[in-house]
Length: 112
Image (cartoon, rainbow, N blue to C red; front, side, top):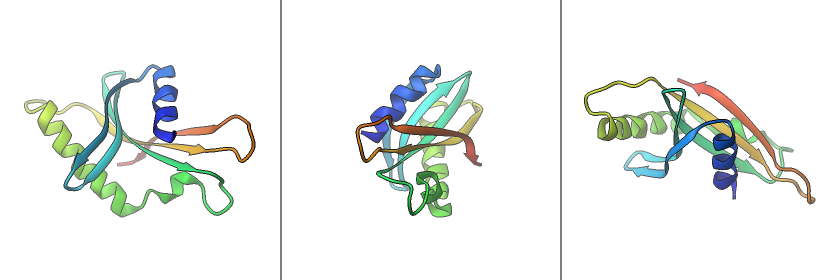
């Protein structure tokens, strides 16, 4: 549910979804999108509550490193002779405990 909500949210902001759940030996990238000629690698974090920690706080340095390596593989496959501008975003989704609106936060350039 989280990734689907994140895709709809990003598309509503003008992003074009290029890939979902890109798997490599290094790990997975949840969403790869394009926005204003920038390739955006997105980690989606979903929680049922933010009582303990916000979802975006769980993107560890190890996860960031794995995403960077996976992104390098994706870029080499899709842009072998080019170096497009890219960034790493986090979409944080907090699901309500009662029927209410899902809280979605988008952190652009969350890490390098």
